[in-house]
Image 1: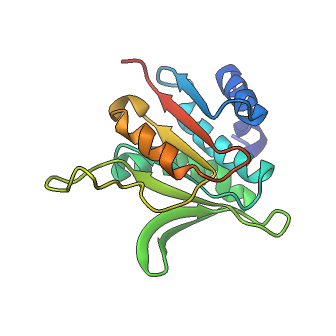
Image 2 (image 1 turned 45 degrees about the vertical axis):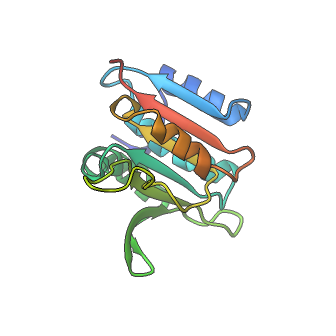
Length: 172
């Protein structure tokens, strides 16, 4: 499949992207079954956010790093690498998977790959999303996590014009 065909959004993705680009809604969500294009939408949202607001950092969150590597990272690689995005698995010597955009207006966007998984024995106050100041956050497989992750994401999305959150999941 050629790159242009991969970037042609389907009806659900088109509606979601229109709501995202409108900047009228701080949270946009999609519930759809297998094959509707939710995971591919993650890549589209990363690039759209960089294109719209270069240098704004974001993240995508999955319920586990394993699922993120098997699904989201594969879609991002397929769509973003041909556009000049680069994957890195560490930051300043620490394991920190992330994607770096090509320059646009002299700025690059970083999209962190995060998981919402609290290891057994970890304090309830611990939060795997702590730290980064973000302009956008995308939760893939939202049906697999509790509402606490939404609160944590809202606490990270403090930048942006405006900051936005995308929630993507299957019906339960």
